[in-house]
Amino acid sequence: MSRIDDLEPQIHDRARASEYIGDGSSTTDADEFRFGVMSRPMMLVKGKTIEDAQWTGVVTGIAVSMLEEGLVDAVVCIASSEDEDEWSRGIPIVARTTREILRGRGVKPALAPSLKVLDEIKGDDSIRRLLFCGVGCAVQAFRAVQDDLGLEDVFVLGTNCADNSPTPRAAKDFIKIGLGLEDGDDDLRVQGYEFMQDFKVHVKLSSPSSSKKSYLKSPYFCLPGSIASASIAPSCLACFDYTNALADVVVGYMAAPLNDSDTMSSSLQSLTVRNQRGQTMVSNAIRHQRLSVHSEQASGSGNHETLSSATVQADNIVMAMTGGPVKEKGMPKLLGNLMSFIMTRAGPKGVNFARYSIDYHVLRNYLHVVDTWGEEKGRRLMPKYAIEIVNHYLGKDGDDSISKLRELILQKKELRP
Image 1 (spheres, helix red, strand yellow):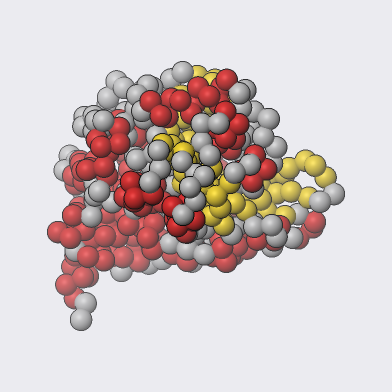
Image 2 (cartoon, one colour; image 1 turned 90 degrees about the vertical axis):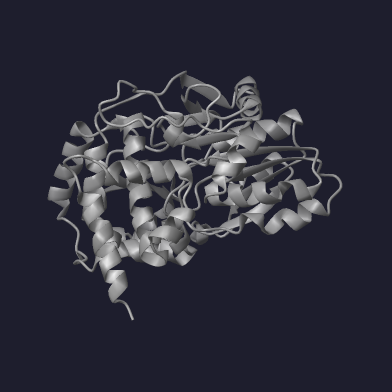
């Protein structure tokens, strides 16, 4: 992950701004310190004319537009399995037609071998210009080898990502065990799920007997504590690239507002343009009427640091690291819904909700690398921005919670045989 510090200025012609933005700052817009290099302010967008997308089709629309315009010869994306029961399984493909790109619609919540197709690209002289679509870990690996592919032009379209499941089976188990939903029950099929800004998991469902989509929404707080470790890949616990720092343009949702009536199919998404290649992709998608801009500048409100610390302290994966008790059962549904209601209205919103999510994942994953490799080696694996976030919380006046968790982990580590 520390390779971000070296590759970021090579790819974007400069490094990100280094000013820490915390509670008490007058800045309500997305900052480069957390969100990475931006050539323009973060925007709020929706996709257009992409049916069966998990959201509104922003990523798919950009990719289709690039191929339609002839700006690329092929698109690397993660396609869905042709078996509807395998919704959680992602298959890397080299797409050369719109129809093939459309196989990539929807989020596959399990790790996928995105680079598996690179030998196919290297051996195909007809592919000179490529669009690579991927999450942060895949993009970092691709950036490290892209010069060896002999391509004339490369575009990289990224998505925000955190906590993928290690296998498709683990993703299905999360739905079954964590949410009590048996895929296929009552003529319903799972199409995907997300941890949303209303502190609930939204599961998108379809039915062969109806064209309408339905949603199951369950509060985070109702999830059984034991489900977390089984549902998150170990590599994701050592990741510090939630915002996909090395992509040319990045699509996400944590920095976007979410109204009570919003679903994935109607929600705004955030769009971060990092360089001219990213701007080319966005402008082209708008020109092809695949993308609409709803706000030229995303913003946020509310404090995020206290909630980030509190979430880390309550995290069951962190509790297991410190030797503390792991809560086997989640809250009762009524209490969980009440908590979600209160947190949504009193907690951070928009960009500040994204700051909360970034800080929480950075802090939790810092504790994981300390637990796994120790303080010194763990920090060597982290990019500078993540180290600065950790240092800020370790040095906060009046809040030593992260310091105490670190000390418990180090003490436990010393006692191991």
